[in-house]
Image (cartoon, rainbow, N blue to C red; front, side, top):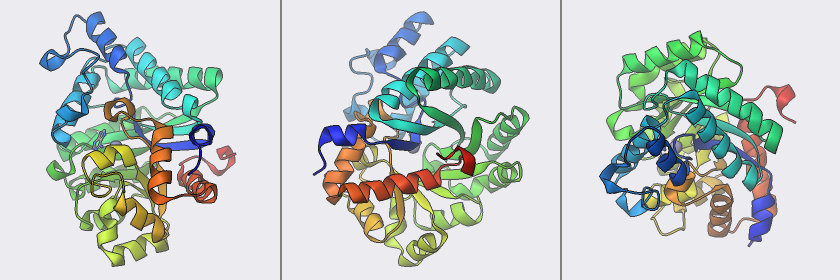
Length: 324
Ligand code: ADE
Ligand code: ZN
């Protein structure tokens, strides 16, 4: 096994970590206090992120929404972005991150969200050397017209930092095909595209590639149940952003016992995978832990890990010239 301190220092690229899923519990408690609110279900900072309380994805997302609702001004946005980029980024060797942000649950308008994020990203770059961009996630449990309205806002407030759009929340309540128009619109505006597919059937992967025009897939573990789609993804060089620790909890990446059979099968088939931590404090993880867990489960050597890291670099949405 690769020593933990080597994994920690390993230069990383982060393509699948959510802003609202990477807020310290203590910060959430501070925001609640600042805005005169209490945490839900009588929780405190100490038990806000009890993984046992995530009975299913819906229960997890309810907590994620609470975090979003407590972000109410530009200083709050700055604080959570800066803390996320340092604590779950630069401190774990992350050199570059594409930050997923879900604007729908956040308590500030999209333009304010962008202002706070952009300032914090510049500060984190200056202070900690981490470079970053933004991927705006459309909410698949809301309507297709709300998704289109958000794409309109992204286009209207276009800044260089925003490189693409994604699709998050519960796949069971929002199959990808519903969002084809929003994604096509985003594509026409020059935005890159990715979509979550963690629990859905392999057919969703085809819809995501064909109808949504995505170049990456978030999770996508069920690809391994369909050899034809595996072959297609090999041919097209599709990258799957895997999140071992968070996905083991829902048994999406394997049987839920840390063996990650599906990620192992993806890697063995030669598919491009990247490693990330999704919602680190909420699932008790961080980028080092996710890299260590998958290295141990798959018996990776440093050569294997280097392959994965280079695939992550290739899958970023940076211009060729910025990819140094
Ligand atoms: N938002 C944050 N984390 C998510 C996940 N794992 N699945 C869907 N939506 C999410
Ligand atoms: Zn995710």
